[in-house]
Every structure is written in C-alpha cells, then in structure tokens.
Image (cartoon, rainbow, N blue to C red; front, side, top):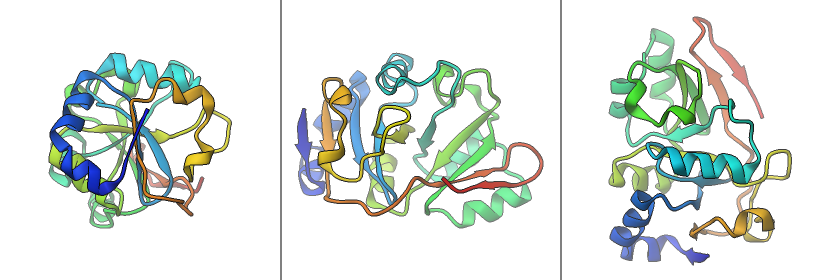
Length: 191
C-alpha cells in the first residue's frame, strides 16, 4: 500500500488515474473524514469495497460527483434540490432521484432509483473533476467500526485490499450530513 501526499498525487496524476481505471481501491481525504474509494462505474471494484467493509449487498453507497453539471445531467433536480446544489461544495450528501441509470454501476445503489452525491469543500473534488468519473466515497472502515480520521485508524482488515492512500494528516470532522431529496420532501439526517 502506497501513501501519497497531495503534492505527490499532482506529480503522478496519470499513474493514479490509470490505477483508478484499472479498478484499484484507495483511501482519500474529504472535508469531513477519510473515504474509501474506487471508480463508481466499475462494478467489480464496487463489490470489492462492499466486501471489505462487510456491507450488505443491498446497501447503497455515495459518490463524489465530477461536477455540478454531472449531477444535473444524471439526477433529477427539484426546486429544493437546486437550493441544496448551490450549497455545494460542502459537508453534505444529497440523495437525489437518478434519471440516468448508467451513470454509475448498478451495485452502487442496488434496487434504488436514487443516488447519494457529494461535492466536498476540499481539493479532492477538483481531483475527481480532473479524472471525470464519479468516485465511490464511503467511510474508510469496516461497517460498525470507527471511521478513519488519521493513518493509525486504518483498520487492518482494509489494508490488504487498498492500493494507495492519499493522506494529509489528522481529520477532525464527522461523516457528512444526509439530505434526502428523493421522496418529494426534504429529510435531513446528521450522522
């Protein structure tokens, strides 16, 4: 498992992008905590994350969207949704109705017509925009265990399946707030 700083990532962008397109799993920083990620259009990689985290096969995962335009092209945006989109980037996961089922692999949101989308207030959003594909973002932990806020928190059960970690020191956040806009009314859930 390789550890990269933001500066090293910039110098090795093509190599890192190649690894992501190959289906490699990685840990990335956000504006809240560290996330476990992969190319959200690659069903095999999504399955690997689900297995590593020991998450049920029917549980949905969120993505970091490459841009607001990507969100508008692939999700239904209501008037309230527009208001929340204006608040991005930020520490929110917007759950929106999905209008383009091919935007992500089917196993990202199994059996659902909605998708959790993030645009962190963090340089990682620019990284995702530069590679142009949605990236899975789920807390870097085994389900039910503490989430990762520093390298020492990285669960040994995850280490073997991770190709690289983009590390920038201790995070003092908590998981993003869920804003469910997919049911006709807005539901806010702090985590």
